[in-house]
Image (cartoon, rainbow, N blue to C red; front, side, top):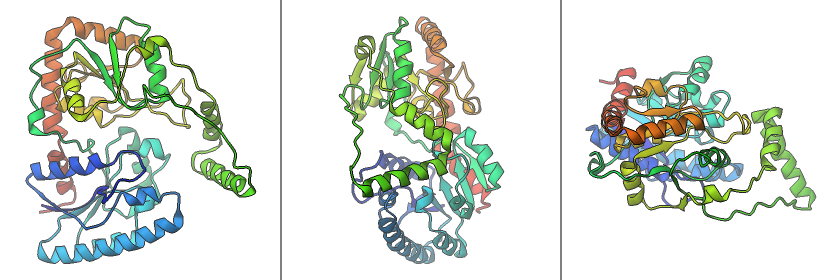
Length: 387
């Protein structure tokens, strides 16, 4: 298969959340599947940087999509393109350009992994795609209700061959690697009250953050602020707006017990080593959202749920609906539903070396076979009826 990619490739760095890893994963996964990828000389990530500037966004869309359609027409004549595979937010989609690609006989597939966090229903922009790649179990009802074509597949994760062996050594560490947010802080504040030798790595944990709220003092600034508030209410509802104000004013001080468990940011090699060699590698499924209170957060399965088992971790993550479709819980990965159960599962795993080895071995086998990009591409090919 020859796949045309539009997967957040960038020509330069942009002031938006991390995105470059997606290009790395998908390209290597396609090549490992024995397929080829091709692309246009454009900056897809730039479209995310213009999400709040309509004029710049429209200029970007016009320029980018003209180049892409022209490149696809030229490449399709030289070597037929099997399908167009993208990772688009709604505002990046240009419906007429997608239809021009489809008119060439090229099916268009869009991957999106923040349905649950971003939406309460599927954006109308996604209706144009021949197939929507949906990794979140909780997002499936959105697509069923909208009656859009979709396929439920794991997050597209790829790890290099040299990292796929089980670790030669195992530390005594109970580790979590991830950036700081309010829900993770609250969870780990509870966890440190138990005899858990927890070590936390990631951005934001050891940095001092000063939050200030200041008005512009001008009518123009006030009008802009009001417009943003109206847009927020229209998108998420009044209840979410009220919850936003509650969370905005909630700034608890971090306890000294939790501060003693923090180790800050780490490089890539350390990330791999700690994930693989920790006695237990923790995952957290909850996420901050103004549609849910801090005391009753929502959850969904993350990319980490594929990556950690692929690396051979002894993986213990927060339960969320759909994990049982990915793994045999208890024999391939372990889960917890609250901090008390987390502590109990950790104690159990610390005492049972054979169970830890089983989770590493069986979880890795399941992830590398059934949850690989190669396996997902084969299922997409079948659903699109590509010969």
